[in-house]
Amino acid sequence: MKKSYRKYMIYVLGITFVVLLTVCTTLFFDSHINVVNGHVVSSHNGEIALNVAVSVFLILITLAVVRQHYRQASLEIFSSVDSLTHLYNRRAFDEKVDHYIANKRHRGRPALVVMVDIDDFKLVNDLYGHEVGDGVLRDLAANMKACFGPDAILCRNGGDEFCALIPGDNPIGLTKLTNMAKYYEDRGKKCPYTVSIGYAVYPHQGYTYQMALSHADMALYNVKMNSKDSFAKYQPDMGTEQRSKLSFSLDDISNNLPGAILIYRADGDHEILFANAEMITMMGCTSFDELMNYTGCTFDGIVYEADRERVNREIDQQLERRSNDYVDYRIKTMDGRIKEVFDNGKLVDEARFGRVFYVVILDISQHKIRHMLETALERTE
Image 1 (cartoon, rainbow, N blue to C red):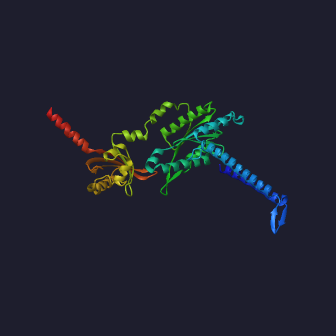
Image 2: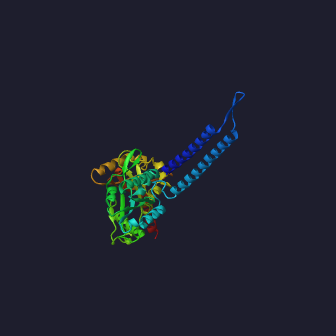
Image 3: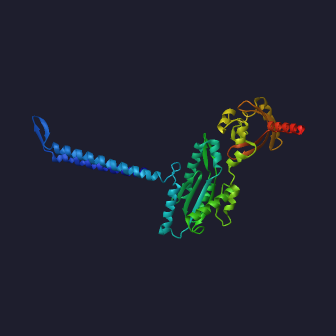
């Protein structure tokens, strides 16, 4: 787009130069200069003024035409390109692929139809926000361009899913993308991310491009189900029924699991990384942001102040003996209620976040109240 703009501006400047040169030539050669009473007077002032007016008019018309042409070209580009990654959007991608396949030079020649998906992308957005997530998407787009080569047709399909058509049947570009170190920036710190890739070979694994794309999608979900951070070629036994195993998303689990789940850093200030809907409700909050504000973004902010020193001491002592910790303490909810809870945590060395606690918290207060009610009902019967 910038090249087109420069081309049009050079054209405008060229026209302007020619017009001005013509005016100057007219002034120099066509004007008969007379001296009257010591003043220089042109005998063709009217013609010169007309020439100047016509020249200015031509320049203005040229500028208007170029501006309109540039705006039209810009609209066409913006309607076919994803604004964040500058790759083709899905509509433009389909058109480019159809044009590629219809080209006689490419008929019968193989091409890789590829689907790429960022692993655990929703977690990145939830933990660090959409600004960091956008950085991951831009970084992956740049890496795809570098690994897949100049002849590849690339597309952001939507969200964190990308498509590509790569001429030939050699998956070397997929190997490069999988094995290369991929990072995104968060507050000056480099955090690694991984991708899963599925592909099919057109036309051998799909006599139409759309069929090959569907097969690549099956291969992608096979990778997601088994290992992530790798790529796989479509095989006939990769049926769509296998995708039912992946039908539970992080949203489903975090919102519907009957228990409060908390993830926080084991080191430093015990920064909270994740809390599910049950945890947020247990603390008397209405959103994750509200929970973070109330607790100061730390696990210590969840524990009742009088219990904090004991809880941290007991967790440290238990971790010296086993991988899990079991501890009970009190929490103070945002609306001032005191609850007794039971905490079962596991310490994990996580590649992206370092030492992390995965914790399940149960509200003992509710169980005690329920037990008291059940006992009272039994006595009245």
